[in-house]
Length: 335
Image 1 (cartoon, rainbow, N blue to C red):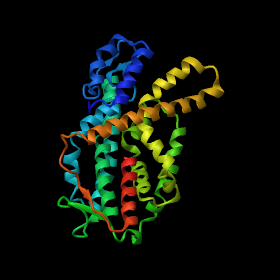
Image 2: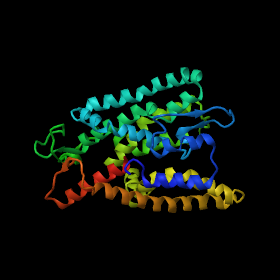
Image 3: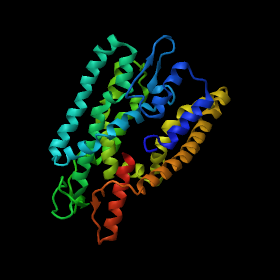
Image 4: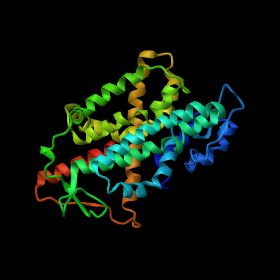
C-alpha cells in the first residue's frame, strides 16, 4: 500500500481504459504495479519505429518513482553518513557529485552507442543514472541544517548526537555570499534559456542536463527558496506557489493522460487546447493530491510507527516558533 501511491495506480487504471496496449506492455504490467520497472529494465526493439521499454510502458514518467523506491532504502544510512559533515566538506561533496555528471556523459558517449536502446533506458530511466543526484539531495539537506539550525542544548552545529534542533540565533546577522542573496533569480535566469534549446532524445546535451548537469542550479534554487533570501524566493514561498508545489507530483503523473485526452477531442481547436488543458490538468491534479494527503495522513497515524524523529525545540517566543514551522514547511515542500 505504501509502495504504490493512489494517484499512480489510478493513472495506470486510466491508461488501461484510455488506449490500447501492446503485448509487451501487458507483460510489464506487474513490474509497473510493483514499481519495479526501473529495477528490472526490459526493452522491445522488434519494431525500430516503435521502441518500447518497461520504464515507460504504462505511465511514461513513472520510472522515477521506481528509482525513488530503491533510493529510499538507502536514505537513512546516507543521512547518518552526512550528519558530521562540516559546511566546507558538504560543499566540496556537492561539487564532486556534480562533476560525476562528466563520468555519466563518458558512459553515455561510449557505452550506449554499443549497447543501443537498452543502455539508454538504463542511464536515462533507471536508478543507476541518478545516484549522484539522490546523494546531492541528502548533502544539500545537511547544508540547509548548518545554515538554519543549531543544537538546542549545546548551541553548536547539529551532528549525529543532536536530539533537539532550534533556529540559529545569529541567522539574521549571517553575511551570506552574493550568490545566496540572489540565488533564486540567478538559478532561474540560467535555467529558463535551456527550454529553448532543441535537442533529440539521444542527444549528449540532454544526457548532461537530464543526468545531473543542472545540479548547481537546482541546489541553489532549493536552498535559496528555503532561506527566502530574495524577493523571487519569497514569491515562490507564497501560498499559491505552495499549492502548485503540492500538486506538482500528481500533475507530473497524470499529464500524459490528460494531454492524450485533449488530442482526442480538441486537437483542431488551437486556441482552446492549451487553456482547457491547463485548467483540466490543475483540477485533476488537485483532486489526486487530496488522495495523496489522505494516504500520507494514514501512514503518519499508523500505530506501527518508526522511532520518533528528531524533535524541533519548542520556543517561548511565539514568532520564532512560527518562523521555525514556516521554514521547515517550505523546505519539505521544496524537496
